[in-house]
Image (cartoon, rainbow, N blue to C red; front, top):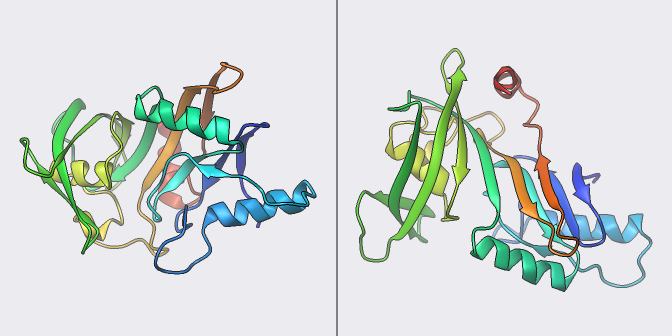
Length: 226
């Protein structure tokens, strides 16, 4: 496996995750990306011992785009802290069914996850067991049967973008779980972690990384909105 590396130094590794790749281990027993990357680094750098790699944040398996790993425990602690304090700017692209009610809007909902069916329920008001979820979306343009949205994420709830966009009548292309009309042939959903901006945990440089979307007809058509 040769990963698509977007940024790497002694402290951080950022890759462009393909849709369908598993970020970390789950009940399926499939080899997760973090293990594949450790093996890749071990061989590439001819490391005799174990490779340290910490996953800083997660992406759902059918989602593509930027995935950030820490190569040292110090970097992992500092990046985890930055995510917790929301000092990271996360921008996604989504191809959705339906037309959003406004060209741009802040969505605030309250989300509660059901672990049994791995699905998140959206509530308009504070509800017992539900966590506040906030995002901004901006309409970029329309394709034949879909609309392209840019999303800035302010909280990191499970299935947040998928559930919140579905709640306004704009399920993501291919996302049967949240109301899409049909699945994508490869089982992906048209949600892509497009851009990540943050302060480097060691050098204090401002880092911005952009990931190209998957190479398919609809995503390629959406590139006109860049």
